[in-house]
Length: 229
Image (cartoon, rainbow, N blue to C red):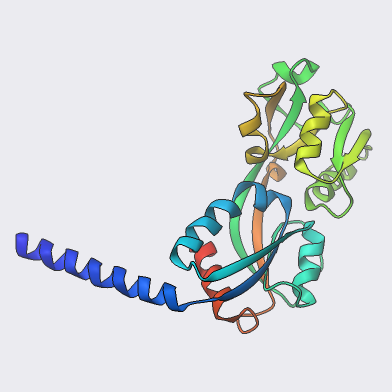
């Protein structure tokens, strides 16, 4: 048993040294454009883990709406794009599943809906809302769901970031729909509450777009493999 264990540990040591040697030699720059949802929830930890393995590879990150992420990849301004589903014009791109996020309703602590455990869109669409700018995949999806109900959103104010949405809701200017991880860390220090949305569309897919495997380069390929592994 000891002999077998020593062989396993030696194999692991050899593998570890091989990875270290490879990571030291690998260098380059990867241009990544991503939407707010992925930057807020997933990319920081994934980038940090990647940088420990490949410290010489530099990541240039830009934040844009999902619509502009797709455009950036198509125009060769980005090697890798990270966006939320429900975005159009993704043809001629390679699309890969990355993560999933859960949308919740964010309300001020004194709001009439705060006593509900779950809500459907009919429950909250009558209230004034804080929205995101045009081009946001999240806002586009909410608008689409509202159109299906043949009603209109009572949009009190529109902002460009999740932080802006949070602050507007806390100030009492309306309610909002946000990804869970974009709000849960603020709940203890704010006057905000979240309510589960009992709708199929409340679970979204976060995806990765590249032009093709040949255009992202060696460094881009390493990062892509790390993100989807």
